[in-house]
Amino acid sequence: LGELRGRRADGTEFALEASISEVRVQNKRIFTAIVRDVSERKQLRETLEQRAEYLHRLNALHQAMLAASSAEAIAQTVLDRLPELIGYSHSAILLPDARAQALVVLAVYPTTGKYLKPGMRFPLDLIKDKPGFRSSFLTGNMELIPDLAVARLPRPLLKTLEREKICSVLD
Image 1 (spheres, rainbow, N blue to C red):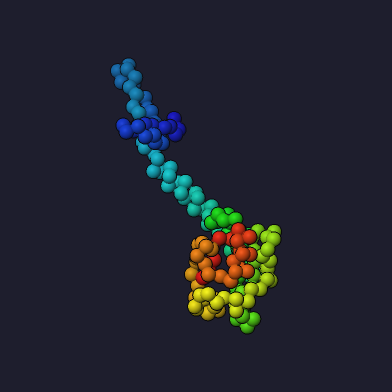
Image 2: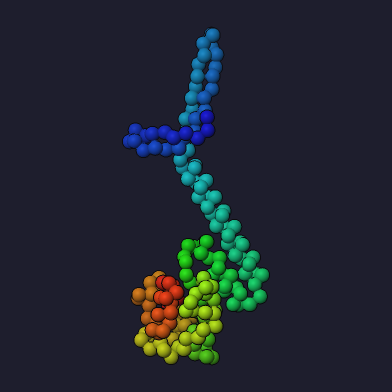
């Protein structure tokens, strides 16, 4: 019969599978119906399909990263493909340049950003309001700050990130 919907005693609906068989006994037709609740199996199947699609996208990202010819190309590839994996609309990768004492914009998504462009530099000496912040960028000891409202960044960088609708940062 295929997939059907059933109703539990409490009124909630669920996916069910039913099969009906017929047997003749002494010229009488006897029908047997077997009904199974398949809602858990259906949910597991959907979860597996979603994870398989996610893994397929991760593999495609991995292949694209391997094909990239520079750190900038790798960064841009990651930013271009991550929205479909984790669902965000704006992002940027900024890396510390210890020699220049600056944060360098490596890549931006979307690439049509008005205010933030690859290659832009933000001097680290603008970062004065948080002890240890400068050294954390230079040494790589950072944590994700999901809300720019609580990040202590140089005002020009903060304004630029806000205009680009980027709302989280590594701190």
